[in-house]
Image (cartoon, rainbow, N blue to C red):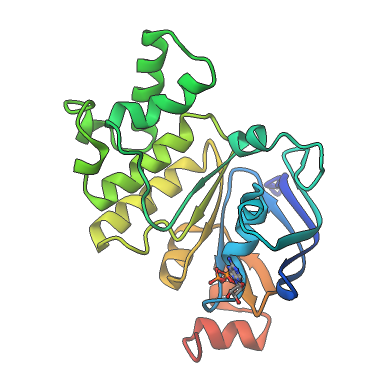
Length: 257
Ligand code: ADP
Protein backbone atom coordinates (compact mmCIF):
# COMPACT_ATOMS: atom_id res chain seq x y z
CA UNK A 1 0.00 0.00 0.00
CA UNK A 2 1.37 3.43 -0.84
CA UNK A 3 0.89 6.40 1.39
CA UNK A 4 -0.24 9.46 -0.47
CA UNK A 5 0.53 12.90 0.86
CA UNK A 6 -2.35 15.13 -0.09
CA UNK A 7 -1.41 18.64 -1.08
CA UNK A 8 -3.94 21.40 -0.87
CA UNK A 9 -3.55 24.61 -2.81
CA UNK A 10 -3.90 27.72 -0.65
CA UNK A 11 -2.59 30.34 -3.09
CA UNK A 12 -3.50 30.08 -6.75
CA UNK A 13 -1.78 32.41 -9.19
CA UNK A 14 -3.08 32.52 -12.75
CA UNK A 15 -1.46 34.63 -15.47
CA UNK A 16 -0.15 37.07 -12.91
CA UNK A 17 1.79 39.98 -14.38
CA UNK A 18 3.05 43.07 -12.62
CA UNK A 19 4.03 46.36 -14.23
CA UNK A 20 5.78 49.46 -12.92
CA UNK A 21 4.55 52.06 -15.36
CA UNK A 22 5.33 50.60 -18.79
CA UNK A 23 7.93 48.21 -17.47
CA UNK A 24 6.88 44.62 -16.91
CA UNK A 25 8.54 43.16 -13.80
CA UNK A 26 6.60 39.88 -13.52
CA UNK A 27 5.32 37.93 -16.53
CA UNK A 28 2.36 35.56 -16.64
CA UNK A 29 2.98 33.54 -13.53
CA UNK A 30 0.94 30.40 -13.03
CA UNK A 31 1.69 28.72 -9.77
CA UNK A 32 -0.13 26.94 -6.96
CA UNK A 33 1.27 27.20 -3.46
CA UNK A 34 0.50 24.43 -0.99
CA UNK A 35 -0.97 24.82 2.47
CA UNK A 36 1.34 24.25 5.45
CA UNK A 37 4.45 24.27 3.34
CA UNK A 38 7.47 26.52 2.98
CA UNK A 39 7.90 27.79 -0.58
CA UNK A 40 11.12 29.59 -1.48
CA UNK A 41 11.41 32.13 -4.29
CA UNK A 42 14.94 32.22 -5.69
CA UNK A 43 16.62 33.93 -8.61
CA UNK A 44 19.03 36.77 -9.33
CA UNK A 45 18.39 40.24 -7.99
CA UNK A 46 15.71 42.11 -9.93
CA UNK A 47 13.97 38.99 -11.30
CA UNK A 48 10.64 39.91 -9.68
CA UNK A 49 10.57 37.76 -6.54
CA UNK A 50 9.59 40.54 -4.12
CA UNK A 51 7.21 42.09 -6.61
CA UNK A 52 5.30 38.81 -6.96
CA UNK A 53 5.35 38.28 -3.20
CA UNK A 54 3.89 41.74 -2.59
CA UNK A 55 1.10 41.09 -5.05
CA UNK A 56 -0.24 38.32 -2.81
CA UNK A 57 -1.42 40.74 -0.12
CA UNK A 58 -1.84 43.87 -2.23
CA UNK A 59 1.28 45.54 -0.85
CA UNK A 60 2.00 46.71 -4.40
CA UNK A 61 -0.97 49.06 -3.98
CA UNK A 62 1.37 51.25 -1.96
CA UNK A 63 3.68 51.76 -4.94
CA UNK A 64 2.50 54.46 -7.33
CA UNK A 65 2.34 53.27 -10.95
CA UNK A 66 2.37 49.60 -9.99
CA UNK A 67 -0.31 47.52 -11.73
CA UNK A 68 -1.10 43.84 -11.21
CA UNK A 69 -3.08 41.78 -13.74
CA UNK A 70 -4.28 38.19 -13.64
CA UNK A 71 -5.92 36.24 -10.87
CA UNK A 72 -4.61 35.54 -7.38
CA UNK A 73 -6.84 33.58 -5.05
CA UNK A 74 -5.61 33.26 -1.48
CA UNK A 75 -7.52 30.94 0.82
CA UNK A 76 -10.68 31.67 -1.15
CA UNK A 77 -10.11 35.44 -1.34
CA UNK A 78 -9.97 36.98 -4.81
CA UNK A 79 -7.04 39.27 -4.06
CA UNK A 80 -7.35 41.57 -7.07
CA UNK A 81 -11.09 42.08 -6.78
CA UNK A 82 -12.07 45.72 -6.35
CA UNK A 83 -14.37 44.59 -3.53
CA UNK A 84 -11.71 42.86 -1.47
CA UNK A 85 -11.28 44.11 2.09
CA UNK A 86 -7.59 44.92 2.00
CA UNK A 87 -7.17 45.13 5.77
CA UNK A 88 -8.87 41.77 6.13
CA UNK A 89 -6.68 40.33 3.40
CA UNK A 90 -3.53 41.52 5.14
CA UNK A 91 -4.78 39.96 8.35
CA UNK A 92 -4.94 36.60 6.57
CA UNK A 93 -1.70 37.20 4.67
CA UNK A 94 0.92 38.68 7.00
CA UNK A 95 4.21 40.06 5.78
CA UNK A 96 7.69 40.50 7.22
CA UNK A 97 10.34 42.54 5.44
CA UNK A 98 14.08 42.43 4.96
CA UNK A 99 14.77 45.08 7.58
CA UNK A 100 13.10 44.52 10.91
CA UNK A 101 10.68 47.40 11.41
CA UNK A 102 9.37 47.27 14.99
CA UNK A 103 7.27 50.19 16.20
CA UNK A 104 9.01 52.68 18.51
CA UNK A 105 7.15 51.11 21.41
CA UNK A 106 7.68 48.42 24.02
CA UNK A 107 8.04 44.76 23.11
CA UNK A 108 4.57 44.17 24.61
CA UNK A 109 2.98 47.03 22.70
CA UNK A 110 4.45 45.88 19.40
CA UNK A 111 2.39 42.70 19.70
CA UNK A 112 -0.67 44.12 21.46
CA UNK A 113 -1.09 47.13 19.20
CA UNK A 114 -2.94 45.53 16.27
CA UNK A 115 -5.20 43.20 18.29
CA UNK A 116 -6.18 46.19 20.46
CA UNK A 117 -6.79 48.28 17.36
CA UNK A 118 -9.08 45.49 16.14
CA UNK A 119 -11.10 45.60 19.33
CA UNK A 120 -9.43 43.35 21.91
CA UNK A 121 -9.66 45.39 25.12
CA UNK A 122 -9.40 42.77 27.85
CA UNK A 123 -5.96 42.99 29.47
CA UNK A 124 -5.83 39.26 30.21
CA UNK A 125 -6.69 38.41 26.61
CA UNK A 126 -4.01 40.81 25.34
CA UNK A 127 -1.47 39.26 27.73
CA UNK A 128 -2.35 35.85 26.31
CA UNK A 129 -1.94 37.05 22.74
CA UNK A 130 1.43 38.64 23.56
CA UNK A 131 2.73 35.54 25.31
CA UNK A 132 1.36 33.12 22.71
CA UNK A 133 2.73 35.10 19.76
CA UNK A 134 6.16 35.52 21.34
CA UNK A 135 6.28 31.80 22.13
CA UNK A 136 5.39 30.86 18.58
CA UNK A 137 8.10 33.20 17.32
CA UNK A 138 10.63 31.54 19.67
CA UNK A 139 11.29 34.84 21.45
CA UNK A 140 9.37 34.50 24.72
CA UNK A 141 12.18 33.07 26.82
CA UNK A 142 14.50 35.87 25.78
CA UNK A 143 12.09 38.73 26.50
CA UNK A 144 9.58 37.57 29.11
CA UNK A 145 11.29 39.57 31.86
CA UNK A 146 11.55 42.76 29.84
CA UNK A 147 8.25 43.03 27.99
CA UNK A 148 8.01 46.75 28.72
CA UNK A 149 11.47 47.60 27.41
CA UNK A 150 11.70 49.31 24.07
CA UNK A 151 11.61 46.95 21.08
CA UNK A 152 14.60 48.88 19.81
CA UNK A 153 16.69 47.52 22.69
CA UNK A 154 16.53 44.07 21.06
CA UNK A 155 19.20 42.73 18.72
CA UNK A 156 18.50 42.73 14.98
CA UNK A 157 17.63 39.03 15.00
CA UNK A 158 15.33 39.46 17.99
CA UNK A 159 13.65 42.43 16.32
CA UNK A 160 13.00 40.30 13.27
CA UNK A 161 11.44 37.54 15.40
CA UNK A 162 9.39 40.27 17.11
CA UNK A 163 8.09 41.33 13.69
CA UNK A 164 7.16 37.71 12.99
CA UNK A 165 5.41 37.56 16.38
CA UNK A 166 3.58 40.79 15.52
CA UNK A 167 2.26 39.16 12.34
CA UNK A 168 1.32 35.99 14.22
CA UNK A 169 -0.72 38.04 16.71
CA UNK A 170 -3.18 38.76 13.90
CA UNK A 171 -3.74 35.02 13.43
CA UNK A 172 -2.78 34.91 9.77
CA UNK A 173 -3.03 31.84 7.57
CA UNK A 174 -0.09 32.80 5.38
CA UNK A 175 3.18 34.54 6.15
CA UNK A 176 5.11 36.25 3.37
CA UNK A 177 8.75 36.71 4.31
CA UNK A 178 10.84 38.98 2.10
CA UNK A 179 14.50 38.10 2.73
CA UNK A 180 13.89 38.10 6.50
CA UNK A 181 17.41 37.02 7.41
CA UNK A 182 19.51 38.81 4.83
CA UNK A 183 20.58 41.55 7.25
CA UNK A 184 21.34 39.15 10.11
CA UNK A 185 24.41 37.38 11.44
CA UNK A 186 24.71 33.57 11.01
CA UNK A 187 23.38 32.67 14.49
CA UNK A 188 20.34 34.94 14.14
CA UNK A 189 19.82 33.57 10.64
CA UNK A 190 19.82 30.03 11.97
CA UNK A 191 17.19 30.99 14.56
CA UNK A 192 14.97 32.47 11.86
CA UNK A 193 15.40 29.35 9.73
CA UNK A 194 14.48 27.08 12.64
CA UNK A 195 11.52 29.28 13.35
CA UNK A 196 10.29 29.17 9.75
CA UNK A 197 10.47 25.39 9.72
CA UNK A 198 8.55 25.15 12.99
CA UNK A 199 5.85 27.58 11.85
CA UNK A 200 4.78 25.60 8.81
CA UNK A 201 2.71 23.24 10.97
CA UNK A 202 0.38 26.13 11.54
CA UNK A 203 0.99 28.54 8.68
CA UNK A 204 1.81 28.55 4.99
CA UNK A 205 5.07 30.34 4.38
CA UNK A 206 6.41 31.94 1.23
CA UNK A 207 9.95 33.22 1.57
CA UNK A 208 12.07 35.24 -0.82
CA UNK A 209 15.73 34.50 -0.36
CA UNK A 210 18.93 35.17 -2.25
CA UNK A 211 20.59 32.46 -0.17
CA UNK A 212 20.39 29.18 -2.07
CA UNK A 213 21.59 27.15 0.91
CA UNK A 214 18.81 28.66 2.95
CA UNK A 215 16.22 27.70 0.33
CA UNK A 216 17.61 24.17 0.23
CA UNK A 217 17.61 23.89 4.03
CA UNK A 218 14.18 25.17 4.88
CA UNK A 219 11.79 24.94 1.94
CA UNK A 220 9.56 22.16 0.65
CA UNK A 221 9.11 23.74 -2.78
CA UNK A 222 11.33 26.12 -4.67
CA UNK A 223 10.43 28.48 -7.47
CA UNK A 224 13.21 29.81 -9.68
CA UNK A 225 12.61 33.13 -11.44
CA UNK A 226 14.55 34.87 -14.17
CA UNK A 227 13.72 38.28 -15.62
CA UNK A 228 10.16 38.17 -14.34
CA UNK A 229 9.43 34.64 -15.54
CA UNK A 230 8.93 31.49 -13.53
CA UNK A 231 11.47 29.14 -15.02
CA UNK A 232 11.02 26.13 -12.78
CA UNK A 233 8.94 25.20 -9.75
CA UNK A 234 9.27 21.88 -8.02
CA UNK A 235 10.02 20.02 -4.82
CA UNK A 236 13.14 21.59 -3.32
CA UNK A 237 14.91 18.25 -3.11
CA UNK A 238 14.37 17.75 -6.83
CA UNK A 239 15.28 21.31 -7.83
CA UNK A 240 18.60 21.11 -6.07
CA UNK A 241 19.55 17.63 -7.26
CA UNK A 242 18.06 17.27 -10.72
CA UNK A 243 16.68 20.55 -12.07
CA UNK A 244 14.84 20.19 -15.36
CA UNK A 245 15.99 23.42 -16.97
CA UNK A 246 19.48 24.29 -18.02
CA UNK A 247 19.11 27.84 -16.62
CA UNK A 248 18.04 26.53 -13.21
CA UNK A 249 21.02 24.22 -13.17
CA UNK A 250 23.33 27.10 -14.14
CA UNK A 251 21.95 29.33 -11.37
CA UNK A 252 21.97 26.68 -8.68
CA UNK A 253 25.51 25.66 -9.49
CA UNK A 254 26.60 29.28 -9.18
CA UNK A 255 27.40 29.95 -12.83
CA UNK A 256 25.51 33.23 -12.67
CA UNK A 257 23.55 35.18 -10.13
P1 ADP B 1 13.81 40.80 -6.76
O1 ADP B 1 12.94 40.71 -5.56
O2 ADP B 1 13.88 39.52 -7.52
O3 ADP B 1 15.17 41.37 -6.49
P2 ADP B 1 12.07 42.98 -7.53
O4 ADP B 1 10.72 42.41 -7.48
O5 ADP B 1 12.53 43.83 -6.40
O6 ADP B 1 13.12 41.80 -7.80
O7 ADP B 1 12.23 43.85 -8.85
C1 ADP B 1 11.80 43.38 -10.13
C2 ADP B 1 11.96 44.51 -11.15
O8 ADP B 1 11.05 45.54 -10.83
C3 ADP B 1 13.34 45.13 -11.14
O9 ADP B 1 13.68 45.48 -12.47
C4 ADP B 1 13.17 46.36 -10.30
O10 ADP B 1 14.06 47.38 -10.68
C5 ADP B 1 11.73 46.75 -10.59
N1 ADP B 1 11.13 47.44 -9.44
C6 ADP B 1 11.01 46.94 -8.18
N2 ADP B 1 10.39 47.83 -7.36
C7 ADP B 1 10.12 48.91 -8.13
C8 ADP B 1 9.50 50.17 -7.87
N3 ADP B 1 9.04 50.50 -6.66
N4 ADP B 1 9.40 51.04 -8.91
C9 ADP B 1 9.86 50.73 -10.14
N5 ADP B 1 10.44 49.55 -10.45
C10 ADP B 1 10.59 48.66 -9.46
